[in-house]
Image (cartoon, rainbow, N blue to C red; front, top):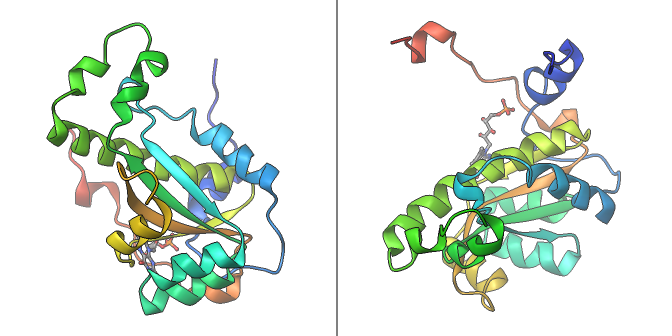
Length: 197
Ligand SMILES: Cc1cc2nc3c(=O)[nH]c(=O)nc-3n(C[C@H](O)[C@H](O)[C@H](O)COP(=O)(O)O)c2cc1C
């Protein structure tokens, strides 16, 4: 039977984990990127849709292309990070459902309903983005998620060959440099944003 994680694990995943603006000069290997995927893909999505399509920018060229499509405040963070990831979402994710969700005809639930696919792709790729952040933390890495970018420009730069894939958000990845973060912003107690009905 699963037990609650030890305090050290909860700290690493949530309580002391931070969003980083810059990283230590310590490389991240392709094996680590695969290890992040192998954890994040296990997180649940509706009907096992797995709509996220991730481009891991490790070359200077790829990072420069992404930086050029980002806000001025984010561009340099992308250039300097060991890895910058584009978390895209496939609006035609339903084409994969016959093998991803084989025990029902889930493809037919979405075929011909673009609006439902857009809602579902955004919902589930955002969840996968959250799993990405937590998987990275679980493996001892840090992230810097960002929505400050021109979506059309990132789509054109990274998904021109797959036009049904659109960018959800982007994130840097590496070993966070504590010198690059500000004090933690407030987090409310349960009573403020919750109620038990
Ligand atoms: C989806 C998303 C988009 C964000 N966009 C930006 C951004 O464009 N630029 C930026 O500097 N930080 C961005 N952030 C960082 C947040 O401001 C940061 O995660 C939040 O303040 C919590 O910081 P903490 O994890 O250090 O407590 C984004 C975070 C998320 C999750």
